[in-house]
Image (cartoon, rainbow, N blue to C red; front, top):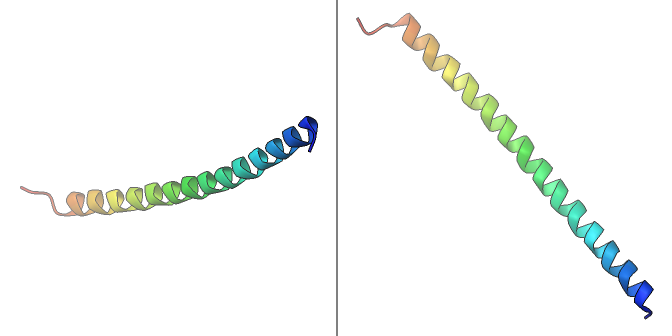
Amino acid sequence: MTHTAENRTDIAAAVVSLTAEAAELETRVNELRQELADLKERMKAVATALYQNPLT
């Protein structure tokens, strides 16, 4: 295999690897966004409960 062909193979392998990693990161970002949305809803529920039942 020539040096040029080896470089192309290395570059192609790097692109495949980076593409897979980007897909994993995108999935994790979406999971974290959902977790934040869920947390926001729980915080609203707690705030509403505290507002409706003040500790007086």
